[in-house]
Image (cartoon, rainbow, N blue to C red; front, side):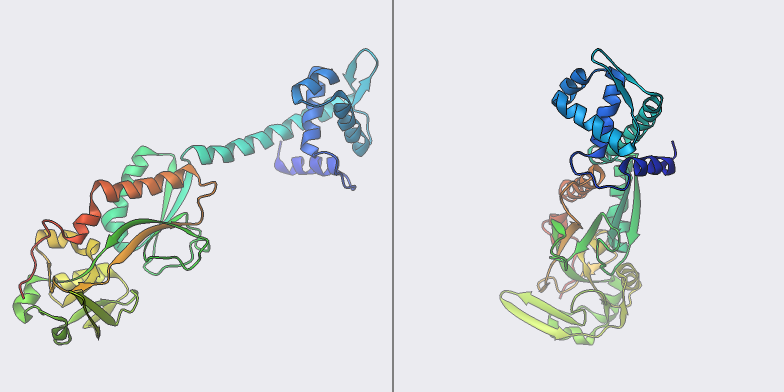
Length: 335
């Protein structure tokens, strides 16, 4: 039956008066049981109600509809013509209601539907796409909608189920976060740049070098270095500034300057020797990588399993240790 017809039937059931004694869908359930069992006593036993309660429910339904649905005698019950017609419609309504409830419950229990994931371009290309590939193999009924954005928007307003962020807290305290890893920020440069310009040995030499700066990071036009309890905070200007870390990495690989980025962005290039770390004894403030989501309450299976896959990827690949550079960190430029 089309939903438009169901709406007409429900409207007819409700009528114009308020009804506070019993839920109307309960009335339909009671009535369809009476139609099937032809016995108020059996229906009362099945539903855990009193016989008088079942009778009141039937009377209320008939009074509101203004039509007799059941013929009652002291020995038997039988449906009227209107009752038989209405019983079929009521069963259809209840069947669709049950199907709707079961479909929603299945989403919570089984990994189904569309999962909307937000992340930066760099993290998506380097880590998220392999995670998504395996997740799709494990749960083919889930569709992934990947939303790539380097600027962090509101999770709910963006319609995201999960978002991977490199910041410690969310602006909206109602959102839930789960920590993935601590990620150091490091300075790297191509061997060709170092061969042509040398490598700075301390923060005071930074101003004489070309810097490649990511403009969406916090306090991007200052660098704060730490070493052995000493802190130096310096204003910096970029030879090239950009709102995308992958573009800046390519500029660094071309020898355009010293790149300031999280370790996960440049790890493969460091391992291959295409980039080397400069000033390794001076550390920048690390970033906290989290996965953020609206709430833990009534979380669909697809969301819970994807978050678990993210955490498992970080842990099984020991990425926090790899990014920290201990041990076996790739080659570093000499001072």
